[in-house]
Image (cartoon, rainbow, N blue to C red; front, side, top):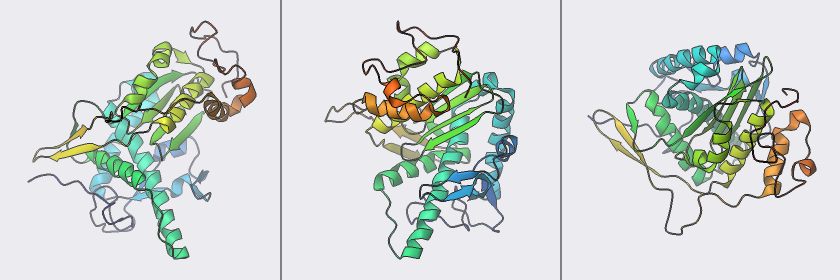
Length: 327
């Protein structure tokens, strides 16, 4: 008997009586899973802190939940235990986590935010009597993310290459640092805490790692100052915006597992996979990411040919000993 992947986007089923992951009917409304890990919320006192939704409303981190069956929750718990242990130990342990496990951990958070955003949108549509306006491109991305997240309960193999890329960096963070960012439209995620940071692009077939290979090679094996990581982060978030493909995947179901194969990103137009890099726009992103240090756009792009960088010096070498606060 072949495995069947659940697709909630077929009939837009995002109620609280159905497991968000498997589609199983829930026995109780108490079958919930926190979007953000409980251990993380407690460690950084996040439970009652505000989380801004796309409609400008606020909820608390603790209010972000997912309806989840006991079986699926157990699978997430097993991953969570390993990730919590590694993140408690720090960079060296996080770096050793399997990429697929990190993907599942990150995807649960990002998709959890998406699920809650969809529920908010559906409630607003009911109140206003208008149809919910939902981009088909986003449905396509979220459907694939949800399908791949089911790898936590369904044996799944990503053929040829991973649909995602995840980078782990060693960062000299200030104590009690917790910096989380996501962009659900482009499916990019970053997290900075303890002595490490993560950037995950969840549906790019690894192209961002190629696009940024020069800077990644430069920082490889280095302990970064937080401002250096935020610079890498700004580059990634901006390039995720420039990424102009809508990746397609084929899912082949067999009795043993589901095989996921990415389709080629190049098409007959031969158009580059990333749109042109605009220095001013990048500078605006960097200004936002460097907000703790107060650098302004005009300083950052004073030389448009060579925007301000704390990763490279004027000779293109890696900059050590950054004499700035840790942010």
